Image 1 (cartoon, rainbow, N blue to C red):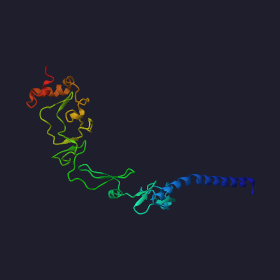
Image 2: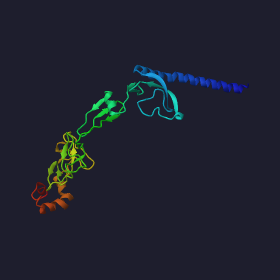
Image 3: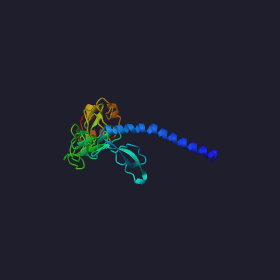
Image 4: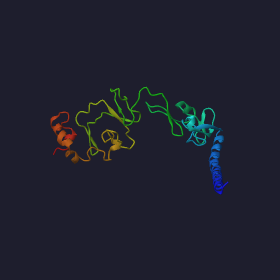
Length: 261
């Protein structure tokens, strides 16, 4: 046998031995910690065919870790926690696939707001919802409500203010709210969260000193910051000034007096 062949064999043997030593010095340390965690939480160490990308002791509480086809699987160590439980990568925990599973496991229950559903929250972030709902749903913050239109809830949820109606015909000028003749004939309102100290913004209609003065006054949320600004606006020049002269419903109202010499 030539020296060249002998050298190649020696390199292969040494390389293989080095890789074996490396594996024995690294992988067992991690595996031993997982093994200990498994047995400490009542599980038993076993093996199973799991997906090729999965390492030993995968999270079996997640669907899919060991669901690959045989040709795309490998044998790995797993923690068998027994019936009704699964190994989440750190310990054996109750297996949760539904709202009732979550309740039975004793996880956090969040009571529903009127019209909502009860929540059960698993520590890993999953949330399960009950199927029961209030027979009379309510509008949440920023949602619309109507006592006539069936497309919307007929009331706002507890703690919210019912702002009727939108669009609003009132003008807010320097934190003062002025009526502009007859109110809007719209039968749709909006649920807003007044009293939390925040002048909230919504998709189309925002809170302002007219619909929520307790949160919006003094925060620069008026349509016009001053009477002078209002009197120079097109709202006054092109519309309201004429209405104040011709429409009985608005004649003599406070807003008509603002720009009168």
